[in-house]
Length: 125
Image (cartoon, rainbow, N blue to C red):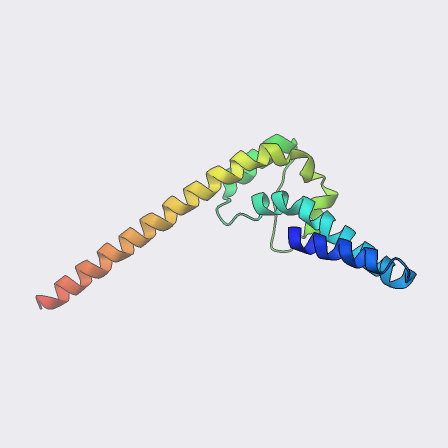
């Protein structure tokens, strides 16, 4: 994002004599900056490790039920003003990530063991 901001800043400066181009460059930079500010929230709430218990914690922090669906959009999240709670969401999302990594490791270990057991049993038939 740093490189993009530098390029957009330079473009804005170079287009200062051309109002339509300057306006486009300025608006684009502002939109990207707006999105960049929301990335921590997106990172926390779009975490693949978030389970029902994590959403219950998020709901407790916010003080109202938060139950995202497949149709929930970033605009919905913005409208809920959830960005105000990002500092409380980060530890919840971090715990969800760690739990998810453990779940994946257990599944991998189980499937590896099962495959080895299956191969060994096939050799003895």
